[in-house]
Length: 139
Image 1 (tube, rainbow, N blue to C red):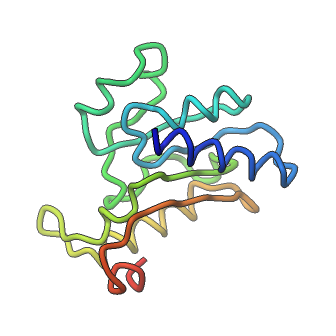
Image 2 (spheres, helix red, strand yellow; image 1 turned 30 degrees about the horizontal axis):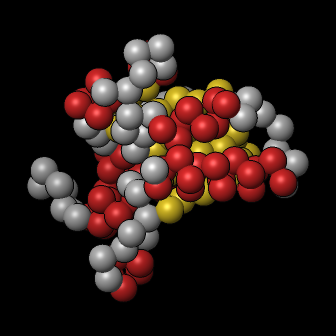
Image 3 (cartoon, rainbow, N blue to C red; image 1 turned 120 degrees about the vertical axis):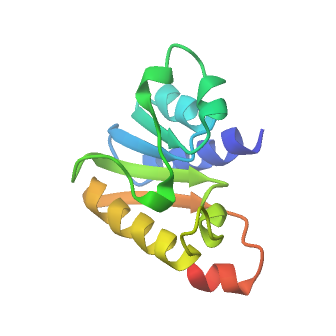
């Protein structure tokens, strides 16, 4: 599965760069595949996803560590909460207007809130599928 492979590469990156285990945010967590890889490597992880159906399909043992949230509305967490974050195949969805909100404001709100919820010197890793160069420029 793509998410598990990419998450494993991200975990290896964090470990190779001496990041100790910490609390990570999985943005667009879906069923929790990437979060499971992080947990297996000794990290704690909280996921957030726009889709109630995806969160409901996650492992019941970890469902309580997920939040129903549209990243384009901003991240619903306290400032300086997370030691790191990852997002696998999610950011491209911010590049579309959604429920009357333009993509540019959704991206801005997301990145501002991400900056707020990450601790100073936190690291993030993002994998996404841009549709075109406009999406690359927007992000």
